[in-house]
Length: 104
Image (cartoon, rainbow, N blue to C red; front, side, top):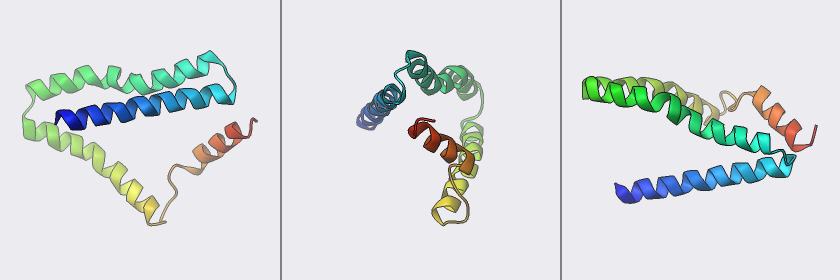
């Protein structure tokens, strides 16, 4: 379990560094780099304390079922996109990212 956690953390740090590097290559504004780092950390800050409180007070089966209730729709959406039934990410997001990469 410890080895898996270390490998996962290493991958997350690599992703964080890569995104910051990419934001610097787009326009070099430090504010955008800081905003991307904030976007990485904000879910942990917002959901970490409530998740710990729910995990401590609620029944384990209930907590796992509630977590699965949030995972299933996103997994189903990913499967739909892999099968070609829908686009993922949404077309608006991909258009925005392509216009950023072209410098518009």
